[in-house]
Length: 60
Image (cartoon, rainbow, N blue to C red):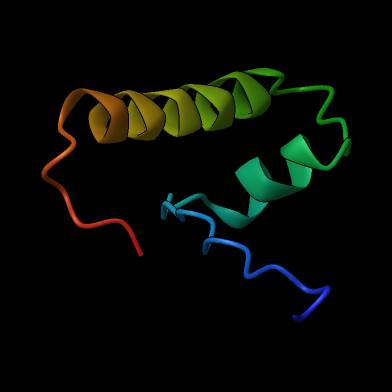
């Protein structure tokens, strides 16, 4: 018997962010535009909601 149990593949989502939005999520601060981080988080939340509310969608 194998000691290694097979792990189910984690579901993935795709979210398209601008370079600055991605940088803002890593902690880079844009003094003139804090809205970048807010918008990036909102995009991720919207995508998660779509995946949860529509389970028929193919998740990779």
